[in-house]
Length: 110
Length: 146
Image 1 (cartoon, rainbow over the protein chains, first blue to last red):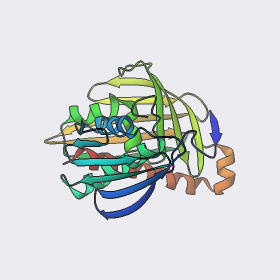
Image 2 (cartoon, rainbow over the protein chains, first blue to last red):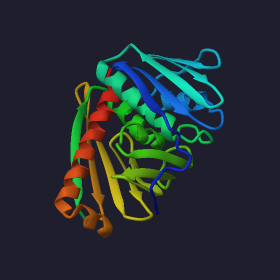
Image 3 (cartoon, rainbow over the protein chains, first blue to last red):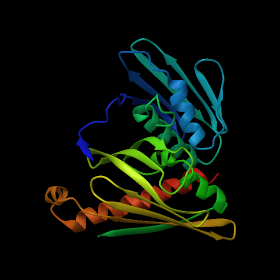
């Protein structure tokens, strides 16, 4: 067992705007381009939400869609989950945010 | 060892609930508060002896270690133990009830003495863990129901 103050390789992802259950915009600064597709897709698969790629920077799932713009120094991620209960949309959004912050891209899911 | 127990009724078939919890250990990061990472799941298919590494944010400290699946009785029970650091045993039980599934979670754990010093009382620590177990099951219910 080891004890540290931070997760190695964690990303800074800030909630910039919250417009309701499952409707949020995030902002993430970084020094190298971040490939969000496998990170977010893996989490949607774990949640059995049937993710489908729609272009290079968008995923559709059974509750709605997630889009992102991935620049050199920062990314913006837009979550629009508009189907399912308010509770479910809130919890799925929280799970996606956790993945955006902590998931390791080399090992799908985490 | 202190024990935390909590249960919840989820409107979903028992097979679906069991699969969500036991088939992919990585999925636990979606519903257990503070559990931020699971990696190196081996072998990929759930079985007794399956191991994985976890990173857990425990009230401000990131604790990492290894876990091993110790019981798998589909679709009735699922158990795993942390095998490095402070020992804990997590047991999920699944019971079909009409169109619902009753899920109970029991966690037995050692309390690290340095944490006891930090939080002053064992009762406070136990209350925090009780709240986390309740939150985990409430989130599991929210993710599995429509």
